[in-house]
Amino acid sequence: MLKLSRKTLYALEAVVDIAYNARAEPVQSKEITRRQGIPQRYLEQVMQQLVRAGILKGVRGPRGGYLLARERRRVTVGEIVRVIAAMEDENDNGYASDSLMGVKVIAPLLDKVQTDMMAQLDSVSIDDLCTEASAESVPRESRDRIDFTI
Image 1 (cartoon, rainbow, N blue to C red):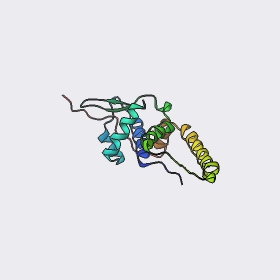
Image 2 (tube, one colour):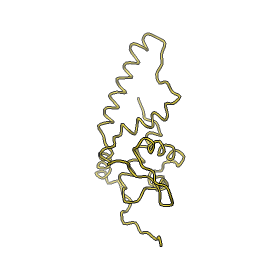
Image 3 (cartoon, rainbow, N blue to C red):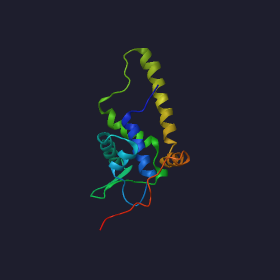
Image 4 (tube, rainbow, N blue to C red):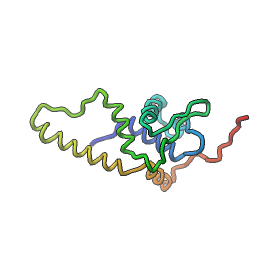
């Protein structure tokens, strides 16, 4: 069975968390870690890649964190998967075979499956996942957060 990597799944959870719990101020990575249980070491790696790719916007400072760089309906799951896959695939050449069977039969099959999967992931937006989270009664962070800043 083809599976997405742990980093890819963490990236998806983090982006949906940011979109789902969106408010005026940026979402801090420690909040995402607390809500989703994503290890901080993985989270920071994927967040920086998503900022570089223009999916997230990083805000520096004591009240810094991350915001979506675009409307959540304009960000697809496929985009996020591609960003993290590129990050992970720097040293991986994918399926390689020297046999005629591998080159002529297996590799084209895997390419088609990959293309079909990415087309499906491209058809799902972050907004779609937020709608699903709401329908499944996933709790949201309170929008009426108390601010004790003086």
